[in-house]
Structure formats: structure tokens, C-alpha cells
Image (cartoon, rainbow, N blue to C red; front, side, top):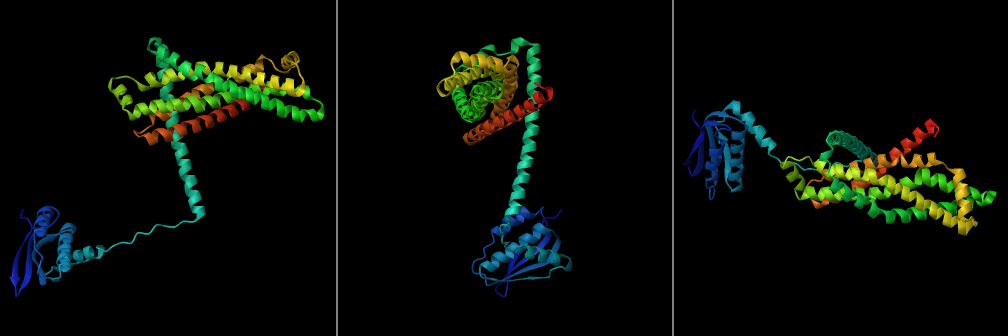
Length: 375
């Protein structure tokens, strides 16, 4: 098949480019290189003769149009002649398309921006829910596989994480729980004193700490302390491509990185919550002694009448579920890191927010369930 080309000549001092053959995309690379070598300096008149052009597509028409523009830019008067009628329309459309377009940012009202933001947030929420549910399913499968073969569990890593998320967290959990007990006792006494029912401050402290606040405070602190640490640790491993190396060795990152943290938190959070309950009651008892002159013995007797083991178990039964949620979200966000320090920071923040949000959702679900069961 013949290739397109052109010849140059001079007629009455004017440059003439006589085109021939097919000017199509197949010939465009060679034609483009040849036209670039054309010296347009000092040319006053230039004519493009298209009488021998056999076929023309948009690529060839663009080369012709660009050449005319280049010659005109060099100061030459340009024209085309012998343009077949079937090709004139394509040349005109290409010339019409070669116009600068002014891009203006669309301005929207506040209502439009609000609706758009809500829409994107909703889509992000559902995508995140679907991805987290999928990660939950994979984790459950790996847990069942590990329970079927207990020898695959990393006991040393699990014990190490138990120390980090449990033992090392006791000081801050104990301090905040103690202060929460003090605040509840002070506020409760201030209100109940108006009715001469100061002794029922003990009931308020016992029920609120054992049923709700002890485990809730412990879970929120662990979510901010240990959940974020899980994300940062695994995220840093992602940045350093250590997770890729684990997969290249044929190991499962969920089994190696997620399960030790998950089991460690599920084991230690109930114990941490029990410690938080004791510290909360201690703070309440101390405040009752100074504010209401309720002795420790009287406090314990009233507490025994106000609460039962069921009250304690209602709070503690939530602990393993909270622990599972916190560890799952922390590890999930860590494995989502995409190889930059900015991603580590963003997903660490996201893991804390999502963990606390889900803990509150699960706690509300437990409250509805216990109310339905009459517990």
C-alpha cells in the first residue's frame, strides 16, 4: 500500500507543498517527522496543493491544519487549492475544533454543596462497611482454621501484646476510672441531697460503674491507645513493605499480624474492665466518705444491697465483643495503609474514630437487648 507524502517546489517565489497518497493515521508518524523538518523561515507565500491526496482522516487533516498554522505563524500567507469536495468538510471541522476553550469552574450554591457532601459521605460509609464486613469474614475464617490447628497460633506474640494492651494500660485506665467514680459520687450527692437521699448515691455509683461506665471507659481508652497502636504498627510494616515480604514467603498476614493482637485484646479487656470497675467504685467510695460522711463499711453494705453479680456480668459480658471490634478495626485500617507516612497518620485517626463509634453502637445494641430480656 502506497504511503502518503509531499513534494516541495517554488512557483513565482511561493512555496508549494504538493500532497499525494493517503494522509491517514498509518502515515502520520513519517509525515509528522517530514513536516517538522520543513524550514518555514523567510517564506512570504505558501500553498498546499491537495489534488493528489487519495484518502484523508482526522490525523492527516490535523497535520495539514497544523502545517498551515505553523507557516502562518512564520509570517507567510497561506492557502489551499485543489481540495476534493469530499475532504473539505473534514478540514473545516478540524480547523473549527482548534480553538482555545476557556475552562471555568462551576459555581454551586451552599445547598448543592451540602447535598453533594452528604452523598459522598454516604457512599464512603457503605463502601467502608462492605470492606470491613469482608475483612471480618476473612478474620473469622482464619480464627476457625487456627482453632482447628492450635499449633499455628503465635503464643509468644500473643503474650507480648497482652502485656502491651493490658498490663501497660492499667495505670491510665485506673486513674480515669477513679476520677469518673469521684465525679459521679459528687454530682449524685449534690442532686440527691435535696431529697434527703444521699445514701442512694452508692446505688448510683454501683449501677452506673458496673453496668456501663467501667467497661465503656476502658474500651474507649483501649481504642485510643491500643487500637491506634495496632494501626500504626501494621501501617508502618506496610510502608516498609514488610507485609509484602510476609505474603511473598507464603504466610498469611491475618494469621501472623491480626490474630495475636485480636486474642490478646479479647483476653485482657475483660480483666482491664474489672480493674476499671474496682477503681471507679474506689473513687466513688472515697468521695462518699468526704462529701457524705459515708464510711467504707456503710458504702459496702449499701453497695451489696444495690447491685448483684448480674449487674457485674452485664458489664463484663460486653468486654470481649468490644475488644473484638477494636482489634478488628485497628488491624483493618493498618492493612489499608498505602505506602506513605500521611496514610499512616490518616488511617490511625480513622481507626480510633471508627472503633469508638462502633463501640458505642454495640453498647446501645446491648442496652436494647438487656432491656428486652429484662436484665
